[in-house]
Length: 508
Ligand SMILES: Cc1cc2nc3c(=O)[nH]c(=O)nc-3n(C[C@H](O)[C@H](O)[C@H](O)COP(=O)(O)OP(=O)(O)OC[C@H]3O[C@@H](n4cnc5c(N)ncnc54)[C@H](O)[C@@H]3O)c2cc1C
Image (tube, rainbow, N blue to C red; front, side, top):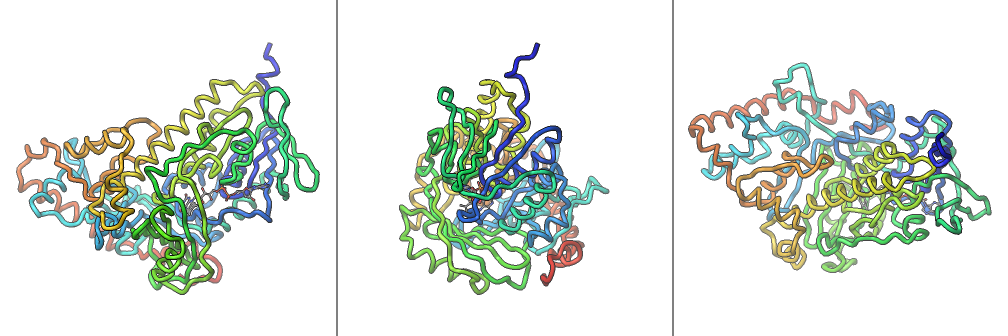
C-alpha cells in the first residue's frame, strides 16, 4: 500500500514572471504532461529586473528540452550569437583576452595545448593565446558559423556558442509558449501568504484584490525580494561581498555600432567593470561597481562616456548583494533565479543557474510527503554550484597585475576561499587542472584562458620538456595556421544572422 504522502503533487504555483519564472513555466509545462496544473503569478506593476541578456552555451540544451527552434527564438528576441567574452583592461590597462567557448587547439599525447603555449611563451615564441582557439579568432574577426560535425578532425567541429537576447522579449517569448502549453497566468500583486499553522508549509498566496491562489508546491521566482523563501520562511542569505565587492550596477541601452560583434565585452573600470552586449536592434550596456569604492554619481558619467552609440534611455540603477540563500529549498518552497542568490554577471552565469535549478527540481520532484532526503540533495547540489561559479568569478579579480585604484588593490590582495587558493597553486605548479565535481561548470579551457589572460605565473608541465623544441614550435605553428584558415572561410556574424534569423525590420 502506498501512503498518501507518496502521491504525486499536482498543483504547482510559480511566483514571479521574470526570466526565472517563465523559464520554469516553459520547461515544466513541456515535460509534465499528465494531470499537473501550473499557474504563474506576476505583477505588471512591479515588473521584472529587465537585465540578463548574455548566456553560456548550455542554454542551447535548455532550448532543445523546451522544444525551442533557434532561429525563431533569435528573431523573436532580437538575439545574436555569442562566442565568448572579451576582457579588456583586466590584467593591466591596455590588455585584452577572450574567454572563448569551445576547444583550444589540439592535444599532443595527453598534454593540452596551453602546456606548449606556456613553453613557447617563456621563450618569447608564442603569439597571443587567442590565436590558438577557433572561437577566439572568429570573435576577433566578427565571424560566425555553427559547429560542423562532418569532419570531426577539424576545429570547425568544436565551435561552441551561446546567445545574447533582449531579456524582456525572452520572457514574452517563453510566456507565449508556456500559455500554449497550458500554463495559467495570473496577473496581480501578492500581499499575503497563508502557511499551515503547524508545519509552516505555504498553503496559498493572497492577491491585492482578495483572490487566493492555493498550491502543493511553490516555486519562488519573485526576484531579489525573495517573497516566500526569504520574507515568509525566513531563510537567511550568505553575503559574499568580501570576495565580490561589486554590489551595484547602472544599465543603459545604446544605438548599434557598425560591426555586429559575436561576443560580450567586459571592460575593467576603476571600481568595477562595464558590460557590452550586442543585440540586433541595440547594444545593452552596464557598469557593475563596488559602492564601497566608488561614488554613485561618478558611474553614470563613466558609463555614458564609454558607449558605442547614442544612449536610448536614462541609466537605470540596480542594487544587489552577491551571495546565496542558506537553503534554496525549504518546506514546500523552491527558490529559483534571483530569489535563490546572485553572482555578478561577469561570466553570464545567472540564467544558467536558473536552468540547472529547474532541471534539478525535475530530477528531484517531490511527492506529497516532501522527503527530507530529496530536499537535502537539492540544497547540496545548488550549494556546490554557487560556490563553484563564485570561485571562478573571484579568480578574475584576484589574478591581476592591477593595483592602481583602491578597488583593484583590495581585490588583488584579498583573502580567497581555500578551494580557489588550492586550484591556483596547482596551476602555478605545472598548469594542471582536475575536476572537483561532476557538476563543475567551468572546465579546463575556461580556467586556462582566464588565468593566462589575467597573467597568472604558471610553469608548464615538465613532460613538455621531453619533446624536441623544434617539434613544439611546428606543432603550435600548425594549430595557428589551421585555425586562421578555418576562420577565413566563415561568413560574418552579421551575414549569418541576416540570412537565418533577422528580426523583423532590423538591418544587421
Ligand atoms: C546588473 C545585472 C546584470 C545581469 N546580467 C546577466 C547576464 O548577462 N546574464 C545572465 O545570465 N544573468 C544576468 N543577470 C541575472 C538575471 O537578470 C536574472 O538571473 C534573471 O533576470 C532572473 O531574474 P528573476 O526572474 O529571478 O527576477 P525578476 O526579473 O526580478 O522577476 C521577479 C518577478 O517576480 C514578480 N514579483 C515580485 N514580487 C511580487 C509580488 N509581490 N506579487 C506578484 N509578483 C511579484 C515580478 O513582477 C517579476 O515578474 C544580471 C543581473 C543583474 C542585476
